[in-house]
Image 1: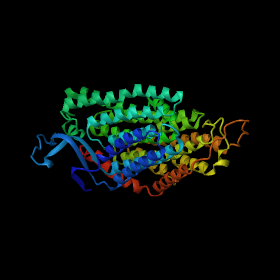
Image 2: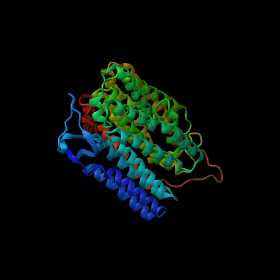
Image 3: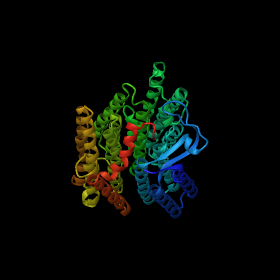
Image 4: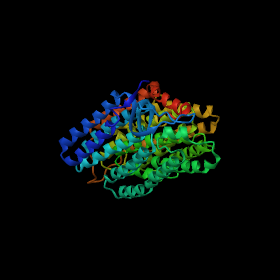
Length: 503
């Protein structure tokens, strides 16, 4: 891979374009046509930049690089510097940001069609959600990692509040209060790592980390603990899963697409940092695996108990976050590839299910499996999309969920922990049961005769079907040709395992 040795032109655009779009959309406020043009053009620009950008770095400030053998590589020329505040754009970042920008476009199109007031302000929050995810997945220093997580937490609250429901206000308040612990955890970890190594740059800190110094072992474990705390809060892992599930269930389903994308990228980014920095500490991987398994099992059990399809999806998103972190926690090349591929697939098939849930809204009677029924007669293609999404989420071939879950199962067996493979299989089966309980009741159960004066709803917009068709195509494409995605993930996994100081 050819990487740029100078500041890469494209990396600032992933931050600047969403900020400028958010400012313009707020100024436009409710001018529908201008908002539509600005939002769509900005989304397309992000897609184009993610495709055309070469791989490389963007540096903000720095210090002489540390050599693994000791000493510094200080020279007057640029190549002699490993700069402190640093962004990196590689294959993993390319597929993650491309996918996030495509989803941003779909969400913007649906928001334009469905919202009647405060459109500009709401869509500006969606752009800032994308920006926070892009920051976290590209960053290679603790300062910007901390900033990205803090920004993301605040934006999530705004997106949830946009629904205007009492349950949304409650969820946003709780999440804002507790998510502050995530940023605080990273800030404390930054202070400890900076004090021990003298570097805020993650690559530099790894090289300078005194892992063999027994007197600093307690400091490193405290830093590890606070970083894991941030990981749990940022991604909504157990035991904080109810807070994240409340966020997913309270937001508009189309907005939840971006919220879960942001969470998955934060889980990947912080998880890889933990593995690179603390992976050789005794019990570090065991702690990460325990959190992952607990999240998977609790999330899927809670999903089976729900009587509202939105909340079923909310808890399944949480549960499948555990699948992502399971692969990363194994710390092997195969495991990391499986975890990264699971993150990509999970974002896609959960988006299919969330758009199907959005479609149910247009019939005007909510998403409760007790009160909504017979939707398949009025929207057969919506039912087909929901069933395909359920098959993919349950790991049924030939859909994408099968490919990533089989890698996770193989990685667990090769790691010598067949019990983890059994847990992955159990999550797949229970996901199938939870989803098809909701799909049967909402789509396939005979429709009860509506009472006089009951709201009948509106037809599903064609744009929603267009977005669903595109996501289903990706679901099948990655299921049949998984190497299309895996080729982007191999290098990232190899670097984490064999060259951990390289971002």
